Picture (spheres, helix red, strand yellow):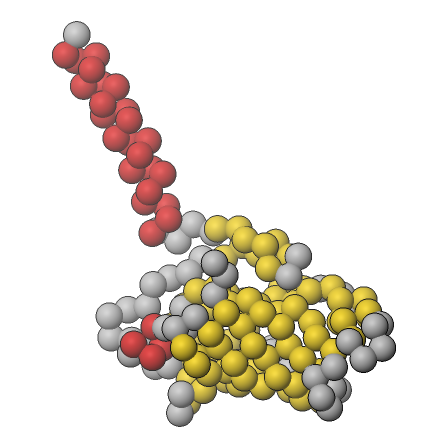
Length: 166
């Protein structure tokens, strides 16, 4: 009787530990950002990473405004998966499938996507650049749950604003 209870207790403990440990051991988690399924692994920053850098870790979602007065917007997101003590970061940049323009009510369909990007913090600004060097974001955390900045593309520049999902 006691042995049967102990075996069930041990089995339950193994199941519980097996459910918890992968969350801290690097198992990919899925989420939806801008209509895209994103598999990600956020590695907690090491203890020697500054609090300013630690604040960047995790998921950020918002939009980017284009045009001379920001009349068009599209959904963007970053999953900042790792931040290292040398102020470099690895992330996934996500964008949606539509640019919405408010002045004329037009919507332009674009190809959505998820791409890995590398970045570096310099002077309080996190600078991310696409692998081909054509696109970039300069982002700054403006409060614990908000990040703002500028993006650059071959077609021009615009403003970016993101927050942590609730």
